[in-house]
Image (cartoon, each protein chain N blue to C red):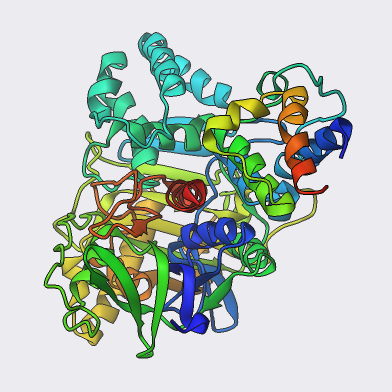
Length: 85
Length: 487
């Protein structure tokens, strides 16, 4: 899985959690919280959907690594690779 | 362990909060079962049929309404958390509501889903208070009302820092109390904030077909996520060992086990299930924590429903969706001495939501709610009970109609009446199990939902998020906090 695929995985999850957000212009290097209205309940859901859909565990100490699409890709791509995806 | 009767989570009660908790848990792969004693879901906000006609149990309006695009409010959080598209609820907004005080409602504050209307009314009727009112609104907006750890403060005391006119204070409190307060005369400020936002800063709406639409959406989400449900099968007792629930004994005599139990039936009521576990077969240790003593709520209500052959607009009552009334110098929100307290109440005319051009409810509906006394209704012989219902039905209609324009003819309402129904505190306890008929539960709320047992949690009215949106958020929050965030 490439880093771009990984960003798409996160965007797909956000699209399901928050269908009322416009995701067409999300900047990868800007914190998601600063460009979308996502609260802590929504971030918890991103983590739980990653586990449900892709079997990826994100421990609470690592939540801040999901801050932007770029940081998500950095953090999650090796995890996908480790699972052979 | 028999896997057929073991669940990750057992939920007691298929009301709004239990269903919402169930959807969250099932969506994230938990094996969940909801146990409901009644044959219909919905709990305090259910629906029923009588003589071929469909009624909503208690819901006047869904509070917390915001228009599409308004984010960060309870309704938006709820829709996201339960993966509900807001079109599924198809909410229709209120036209306008009023708080009418004085023997014939001489002082009347209008409010709509546009907060500027209420602000304008306060400025017009209480010009000396408007600056204080705006400061109060700022304090309400700044308060973190979803905190699970906020300290308790008197709402009356905080409101009086901003408002000095006792009439305006009572008029602001009246709707807020009637739509959610379990506390007499005062409220905890956090509860006041939740209700102030829900009623005034957000607003009222309902689906055309009423509360059943919301319940149907919840049931469908729950089923699609793989949740199980057992109706007409309540939980008789919770069997505990060493401070944890180990099994649930069901009304049908069966027993199931669960890692976690979420109870939506109330704090005192849940305590009774734990306490009623007299001879648990698996209990070898003598350890058992007594149920925490939680006061039963003192506030209960009667409600009348009148079905009319005409639209209420034909009687001159087409303008107001909900009217909160009080005829006395002071507003008394407290346990009443008589069977019914006629001094104040709430009128709801469901026809007066804006259902869109040419769309109207088939029947005219007129609902009226007043404070009542549980003890003076609970143990009456059947014949007296029926006679009292008839007598108070008539008295409530006379009382409520003081706050409405006079109909075209004095007997127009009576002549248009097709049928009536009425619930009393006794009905509430019978169908929902709430002790004392206390719709809003105990005055002591338990934000973290903890009970005497480590793996049993409360959700719903006694956890303390109010209204039906609050009830659903309560189920969601407790499922997240106690189960999903920990696994």
